[in-house]
Length: 120
View 1 (cartoon, rainbow, N blue to C red):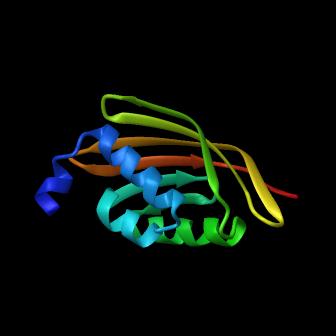
View 2 (cartoon, rainbow, N blue to C red):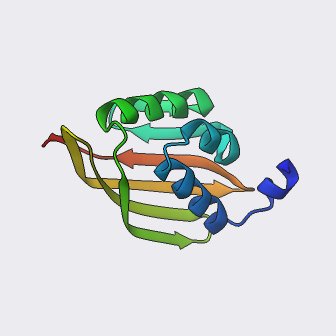
View 3 (cartoon, helix red, strand yellow):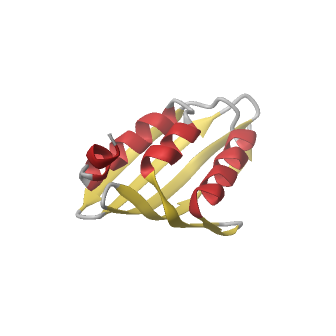
């Protein structure tokens, strides 16, 4: 199965990531789609590898517990993808989520994440 996963197109990886993240299946998403040596740039700093991705997933889950994500724009061009998203939890929301991705050999190898958490 690992070879099969690594043979996916950037669009397939992107859609798999969005599906699993939308279902709050962060650990499975990270194992399937995030490269062991990925780099993620986010307002709190630079995060490395799967441990960095897990830390960011944990923070997002705290900020927007069980919130459904709405993907308002999805673009893929070659190995680069872009996502705009919103989410609303009981006491917080995000209206300006924007992520970019570099996807190579079936892995997300780099990502930028931006969002602002607002009280509801």
